[in-house]
Image (cartoon, rainbow, N blue to C red; front, side, top):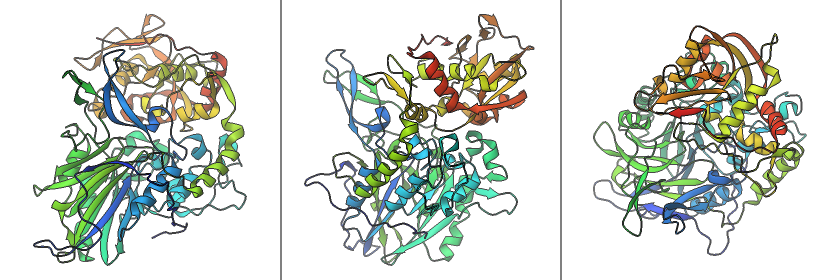
Length: 609
């Protein structure tokens, strides 16, 4: 194991403070060995898991910093509203992990990837080095590689593991590697694993496929996997020369090798996940409402994952030798049993996102069979509440980073008159999506040869947070960066009208058929789509009121991720006259200054029939 950083944890907590948790069911047993018919004495293995941290060192704000725990009727409207708990923040997460480990003989802290990437400015300004440091200091043992670990390319991912500094111009593009003056970054104090990412030149995996850990005489193998669709959702240049192979085939091929090494207890860490349907909830008058799922809804209260969830066929295909599956990617909270190929239930978990939850799974290990007693596995969700003492080491790390980034983060760009959110209406349009698309359209850096873009397209997944109205309405660069944290380049290109129709139809079809992705569009561009056919209504696509002609050519602007065919929008790759401009965040920041004070217009660019 890489253990480059100290993993001792702050143990002091406020008297009486405890995590908000719900057992699913109650955790069985203690850390004392106990006898069970057929498998003798067992050792409880504590598995603490989290996923999709995304560099959220500071407590996340808005809905990203809350967890739904219940529902109640709003007396003013007579409709249900979420009851939430504020959650997340590295200072609190570290303390919760320390509390959970107390008294445990065998404990592992594992993750399902996306620890970095799409991060707030506090982390992204230092190439996420501070997040890697913090999660190492918290005692993370092993992680799968997520798609966002590839945001800055595979070479940068290897640097996150191995350490070393970037020569990045000492703050150019608002980023600075190794800012502390000592010129060092030690890399992760935990192992990144990836069993299905293959270097096409060598035929070997980019990172190790698995690691075997042994504590208190109990060997456990952890296998890491990345979703095979990663090439569709990351910038192509960053993964050039890599093949993303089938998750089930890659994992199952390792079982004989692990058994030859005397290991029967095996855990999958995979960056792929499930989706949750709306929850049926009965109000005090007995009326049934459809509401947002609570953190413990699936499957502790009888819920189930959406049948189209991409994790389900994977979970059903993984070898029965694997005893538990820790998942991520979809930012959902669930703890479910999914039947394995032998017809036996197997635990599949996900702990929300942004450090708001930890899943505690107890895996009883039989010293007779040297394997997990699957029927006795238990799980519970632990909310990372903010009512515990802060870990002072995390506080010091965060404060040091805040001081260094403050001059950039606190620059006021302008004001807004109300919340500008990424919440999409029934047609798929959002107020924040409109604002970002308009900013792209107005960016002078993508004008070439006197040709300015006529239409802008923005992927909804690239919008990571809301712009929330503060008492003074001010929007800072830090706020803007939290909305658009990828440092993508804006790209202008020519597309035909036929290409535009094709990419619009790709919003609901092809790789987006199960979970549509509605592109956000700039002012002056309008269209309608059919909820019945999942197609654009012919003749409805217009630019400033004039129909888009299939054979005509139009200048469009987007980010380099979409331009490379990301998110399943292959039609962008038909573009000609490709011209790279500046960073998307710079264009967004400049536009906010131009339109301040900003009030969102009516969301009428996209309509649904």
